[in-house]
Length: 111
Image: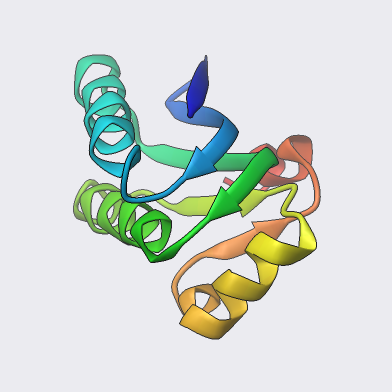
């Protein structure tokens, strides 16, 4: 799993490239948490446009970051989901706590 980060104001945009599973989840958690802490981030946007695969460990990463950001008074959203990842999110019920947007620009406009 490769991650790329963009910081726009107090919004952290995380671009995923690859597979988010039990092999990569811990490193992904640590990388994202470090960026949140070091850069005083308020909101988090997960760009899933290059996500090849995600399992329940990926849901755990998203929910954990949601809890962290919520304590800071911010929002977590996802963008650019492929049908496979969208179905996993739907089945998990995660859309009850986070919003989905088609584009990063749309997400940023709603933060």
